[in-house]
Image 1 (tube, rainbow, N blue to C red):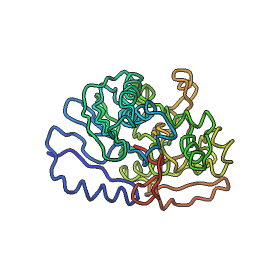
Image 2 (image 1 turned 45 degrees about the vertical axis):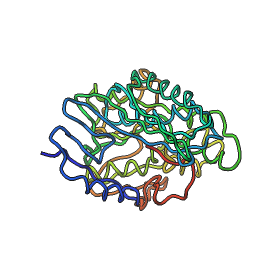
Image 3 (image 1 turned 90 degrees about the horizontal axis):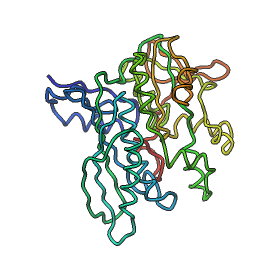
Image 4 (image 1 turned 135 degrees about the vertical axis):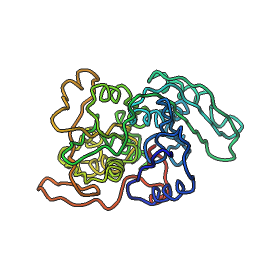
Length: 334
């Protein structure tokens, strides 16, 4: 019996993924969950994900150091472990770099090791190749859990929560693209994101999470995947979105909110719970991270936004999309 495949939210990129996965055929019985979630789930509780990072698509080397490039690449894959509630075990790393010392490959690898160690994982293998053009890094992350958290568990009446704040990484990209150096808090959000592994494990241990995803392509787009997988309607309350203060200071309230909703690369968790069971004070005390209720789940479909005046409008597009967005670096998540 094949493992299940989950639906995706709207967007040209995800329509392409749908078509590609249709070519795969039946999955072997050892695959418990196949394409359509943050990671594949194998027999024995093994969780596997992969994330590709490409120079001038995800970053520019003029903006950040090679060690920071490696750290970001590994964190993108390890964040998928958090999204499934898994404990990371190791990463496999493939690097394609131009010859001649243009890229400090050892520094890239050191950044990957830093990110893996930060969540208790190790680099357990990989591959190296010459690239005729951009630096490319593919990271395969492996983890384990007895209870993988999927995207399809949201039900009418549930509440929608996010960890931390959103929009700072996208604000950093806006600054660089304008020829400016981003404020330190914005730069830090882009170059050293945090895979919320311990926070996700806490949610699993307390059995309070029904569905979860990491915010890599923007909150609207990623919530759209939960809505599609669960067959529900999700309403986000704009006044409650935890927009990063540093992004608001630089961009202003309206543009910062847009960055929080669609910018991506925050790598915070968006999780769905039954009402009345999350204690933000406990979470802050244990992890030093805020959690904010940002919306609710009801019967229906799609993602909707509720404004300050109570007006509710449906979102017709998702978050970052490789096949729709204009070419440009640093604008894509995992």
